[in-house]
Length: 218
Image (cartoon, rainbow, N blue to C red; front, side, top):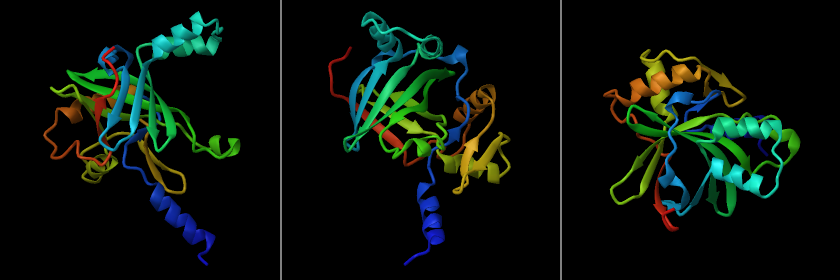
């Protein structure tokens, strides 16, 4: 029988993520730009379902239904009113994200932060998990499909190794998970420089999806 230490090492290797994670949002408030066309239900190239709802519309519906908004709810509304709640459904398991659309020059990005998910086994475990931000590039195609491509951890680590990037970061937890700790202003400036760069394969990643709409255009 394998020791708990060997099992732990194996689990840490399996938990290593491909996407870049950050303590703070990748966007600045002046850059947010709501995109109506993203609202609706989509399926991706891996047969998963994406439900994109307007954060503003959901909050307004709660108000019309007589649900009293707390001070925290009102603060959240002001912060995320130009964003979405995105439900990602894979094999009947749903994960929900607060997602903020923003532009870097003319390129659309979305900042994702986990909101709710089903895989947490107990409250004690959930209190140990940090809900970090990630960022994905969004491209609307001529056939109205949408490509979502996450910023890949491998690309960024390579820049650090080559001493081509100066951005605050840490390695945390038993698996030494890579997490950016820079300010949102610094992260936004980095995205601007990175997206306009000539770095080869800068958007190459395993975390990419092509979404096709399966409901009527809103």
